[in-house]
Length: 279
Picture (tube, rainbow, N blue to C red):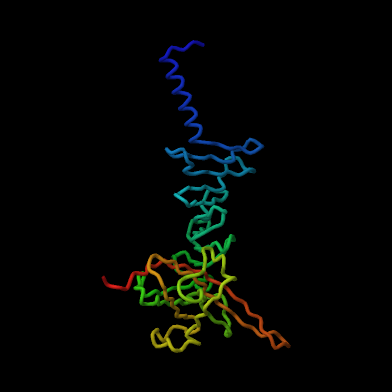
């Protein structure tokens, strides 16, 4: 085949377009010939979103992913192409942050909050709802925080409190406390990787720490309310990390020892410490 310059130009343009279109709509297939995945590319030739299909049922969508900066958003689907759950995943494919879960009528039935603890997925908190959207406390487990400020001067401590709003253990001999890293600053690493390696400070509930009882509403259950605080030595942006722990203690039969069951709620708080010196 002989091309003139003009025909060659249009032919190369056609090939470039064909390659570009193929790249922007990349497809992968299972060994049985069924479509496995379809990837959609943005103008920078990076994957913008992907749709993944079942290997057993042709063209049945299993889940979709959307790539947003350094995060991946995922939607899972059932056999009738209804969304069953959605939320963010990490690069390790762990669920992170708050995930929404839906029933077969597409009502929001639960919200789950996940943390990555070391490299593992951890169900941190959960909220269950009825069809009206009201919280079902007996089927939930979550805490509520009160922080006095998001910005504090260097010469003042952060003052805070956490209340166990929906608990797991409905026992008389149960309680609640908070762990922070000992000393100034936050020494708990990202993903709480050094939780078992550093010394931690314990903050007790008002049922034990009665000195702070007068600050809070007397109608609040004192054994589930924990005041805590932290000093900082340097100014700047900070991330405070801690662990709120609900526990149930039960004496073992015919023994003098106790069995203790615990449930942890991890938390992170962004704050700013400003220089307290006025120039």
